[in-house]
Amino acid sequence: MRLPPRHANVVPLSFLSILALAVALSFGAGCAKDGTEVLIVVDADTAVPPILILRASIAMRYDPSHVAGSDRSSPYESDAADRPGPFVFPLSLPQTIDPSFAGLVDITVEGLDWDTHAVIASGTTAGAIVAQKTTLASLTLQPTAQPGAGADGGVD
Image 1 (cartoon, rainbow, N blue to C red):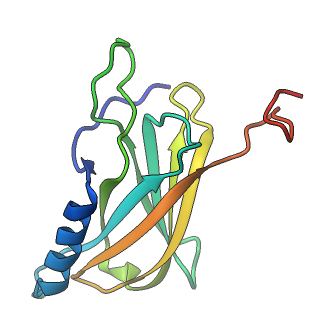
Image 2: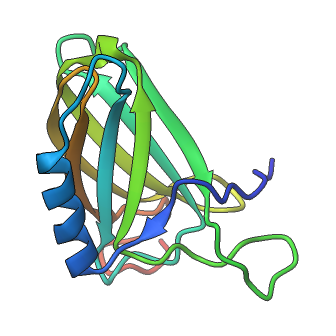
């Protein structure tokens, strides 16, 4: 199954834009009509292979079955007709969630293989969600062990 490209809400960031975003969020005064959002700044270790799909999930710490999440395809064009170009890191990954997620959460972002949807990279961080506010979180994706790969990285 192939996911259609989704171009919304994925923004590559420089260090200065991350800093400016953090400052802007810290000065933003929320009102009761503001949405509840988690802004995840995602970076990737240099060993992570190119990623075309990102899956983000936010799970309540006290009830891990209470999960919100989404899958997003890279918005970048490529030479290949059937797939986008890889994500460019670091990037901003906003997630709008229900205010019922207020409290301690675990935030996970996974890089998925385009063809098999196997997890090829993953990163997790903790956060504290406040209803009607934006929570800033950051994590770094690390490569995951691939099935059939030995300790030296070769195929068994």
